[in-house]
Image (cartoon, rainbow, N blue to C red; front, side):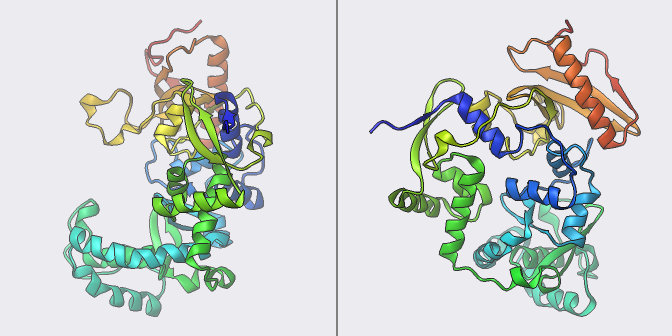
Length: 400
C-alpha cells in the first residue's frame, strides 16, 4: 500500500502551527493565556545566557509579544501552574504533567548515582541525607547554602562540591523541587511543599507514562519518527518509543506517512490518521526573531530537513572557527528561515552587530522594513530605547 505523502509545504505549515508560529503573536502573555502557550508547547527550555534576553523569555515572547518575564515567575513561584525539571534539558513544564515525571525520578535514582559517582566523586552520596534533613528542618535554600566547610573550586560541572551534587541529585530524583529562582539561582525546597497535592500524590504506572509521553509528543509535533518521540520529553527510551509505535499502529491510533524534506527526500514517520485534514494554516506574513533554543528548531537535523536551515549555537566553538557570532538568533519570515542576527543589549541600546541572510534570500526594502519593525518590538521587550547598527552589519547582502 502506498503511504500518504506529507509535502514539504504541508509539513512546514503543520509543524509551525503546532509550535504556535503560524498566527500573529497576540494575547495577554500572562496568567491563563501564558499557561495555555506552555501547555501547547509541552515545555519551555530554560537557559541562563542573557546577551539580549534569556532563551525561555524569547521563546514565550515570540508567541505572545505582550509577554514580560515576571509573568513566567508568577506561574512558577506564585501560582504553581508549572514546575521546573528536566526534559532534554532544564525546562518549565505544566504542573499537571508532574505525575509522569515520577517515572523519570525512579529511573534516575540508580542511573545518576552510578554516573555521578564517577563524574563528581562518590562523596556526594554521603551528603544526600544530610542535605535533605537540612532542607526539611530549615526550609528552602540554594546549593550555596549547603556544604559549609567543603572545598569549593571555581566554575564548571566537574567542580561541584559534594553537597551541591547532593542537592542536584535530590532535585533530579524528585525529593526536592525548585520553589523559585533568585536571579537565575535555583532555590530548593521539599517537593511536598512545592507541588500541589493532587499532582504530587498521583502515581501512574510506568507503562501509562510511556504511553502518555509518546502520544503527547506526537500531538505536539504533528509527525515524528520513534526516535523523535523518545527525544521530545526524554521520558521514553528509544526502544520503548519503537514498541509504542508498533502497538499504536496495531490499534489504529497512528499511521505511517512519508514526510518530504525541502530537498524532496522522503522520510518515513508516524502521524495521526487524520493528519492530512488537520489544521495547517499559512503562516502570517510576519518576521520573527526566535530564541536559539526555540522548540521548533531544537532538533537541528529536523530543522535542516524541513526548512533547509543549518543552525547550531556556536557558543562552544573556539572563536577562530566560528562562522557566525557567539550567540546568534534565528530569523523567520512567514514560514521560511531567512537568516540569523547577532544582537545584544548594551545598557538601553539594542545593538545589531551582524545579520547573515540565508542563501537565496534577496534583501530589499520590504524585508528591511519588517526587520526594523521586529527590532522595534524586541527593543520594547528588552527595555531598550534605541536601536543601533554596527558598520557593515548586513553580511553578504545589500539594501535595495
